[in-house]
Amino acid sequence: MLKFKENIYPQTAEVIDREDPEPLFDPYDFIMQALVSEREVFYSLKQVVAEEALERLSILYPHASRFGGVDILNSISKRLLEAIVQPSLWYEMNAYHYCYLYDCLTSIVEDYSYSDSEQRIKTFPEMMSADIDFNEFLNKYFYNTTFLINLERYNDLEREEKLKLGLDDNCLFGVINGLTPTKEEINLIILENNPY
Image (tube, rainbow, N blue to C red; front, side):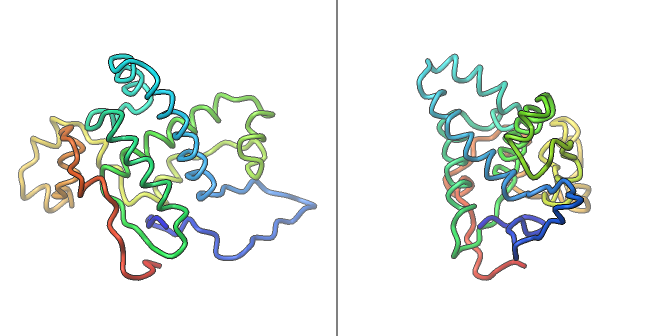
C-alpha cells in the first residue's frame, strides 16, 4: 500500500443516501485507474521507434520525462501499481514517484474534464459527472508538489534557504534538475508499520 499525506484506502464501506446521492470522490479508485491505464501506454510506447517514443513521452509526462525515458518511467509505473495493491506492506514514495504520479493523474483529470457527462459517468460513476478538484486532491493527498518548481528558481536558492523551506531532499534535486534516478531511487521504501 502506498503512503500518502492522508490514507487513500477505504477503512469501511461508505453508505450513500440513495434518495439524495452526492458525488463521491474515491482517491484510491482515481489513482488506481490512472496506474492501470498507464500499463497500456507503456505497452504502446514499446511498439514504436525510440525517437517517436521519446516525443510521445514528453507530451504524456511533461515533468517526469525530464528525468526518465520509457524504461525508467515504466519501471516506476510498475512499482507503484504493484505497491498500491499490496495488502500487507506499506511503501513510502519519493519525489521521482510523486512527479510521475502527478503527470499520470493530470492526464486522467484532463481527459475527464473534457469528456461529456456520459463518458464521465463511465469513468467514475461515483462522481456523478461532477468536476474533479485536482488542486484539492493534491493538497489533501500529496505532501507537496515542490517537484514542479522552476529549475532556475530552485538552483538560485541558497542551501540555507532550501533547508528552511524543506527543499533539501536529494530526490527532489534530481527531479528538478532532470537527473536519472538510481535503482535505489526508483524503488519504493518499505515502511515497518502502518503510517496511519
